[in-house]
Amino acid sequence: MIQEKIREAIIKTIEFVFSEMIFIDTLHIDEKPENFTFTQILFIDIISPLDGYIIAYLPLELRKTIVETIHSTAWEEMHATQIDDCLLEILNVIAGNFMTNFLGRNVKYNISFPAVNYDEEDIENIEDSQEIYFDAEGFIFRMNVLINS
Amino acid sequence: MKYKRILIADDSITSRMIIKRCIEMAGFFDIEYLEAEDGLHGLTVLDTEKVDLIITDLKMPKMDGKTFIRKLKSHNDTKDIPVVVISSLDNTVLEERLKREGVMAVIGKPLSPAKVLDFMEKE
Image (cartoon, rainbow over all chains, first blue to last red; front, side, top):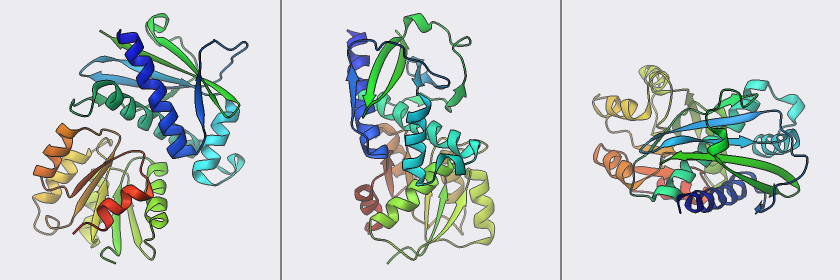
């Protein structure tokens, strides 16, 4: 039951945030795609009233598209801190909207500052998280969500 | 136009840029923007600058938005400046509490030009 609720909330959130902020139509994929690779993880903790986390696994080409669309500037012309700031702000908005979709608008919640990681080694219980793939106009990416009940 | 000088307090440079862009897309031009990376920086800016509107995020390092708003509302020079919260922490409990503390509007991210009209045209 809770797994289905998490899945519905993250799908609704991703489709809304990508459409509103990046102007990209995004659909979830039921089957795990072959050869999915990533080089960077965007991570945010859910602090209260539940605990858990949300992770975004975005391939380089999608990261470029997101940052260039939002800043209207070529990727090569932007500083690394500007790029990270943009991607982390997207995750921040995703996390806030996910919590509202998951808990409803009447429940107060708290989330951490988002962060960039480069591997999964430090992430606890990744095997217990829900893994959902998305297709953003040809760019495949993955979201993992864990809520400890 | 009511607001000519706006202070935006948000730790994300991307968020500050999106706010300015949405205000322009909503049809409000010729506004001078002052920017701060958190509440503490915002207070420093307000020590020397006058603004007509303050837009603030809630989750910021050094001084968060709630503390920033409390300090603004407790100081004679800043208590009457309209404050708008634009945050990803968006729920009715928080919204009601912030409005009781004198916040004019609480807007959830992502911001859009339509949402800008909600506070730029508010009396």
